[in-house]
Image (cartoon, rainbow, N blue to C red; front, side, top):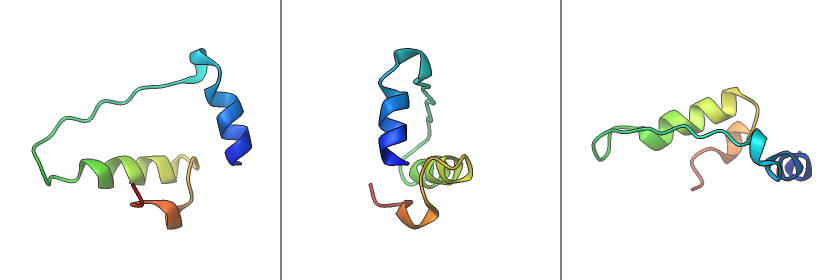
Length: 50
């Protein structure tokens, strides 16, 4: 999966940006982790590691 993700991300047309704006400590990281997990991009066990 990681190799496949890197291959996909090498093409600029496949990259998507998702800006999230909020005050400090209002859950921006939790929100993006949840969205990325639900999309199947990362495993839920890996969420929150950054």
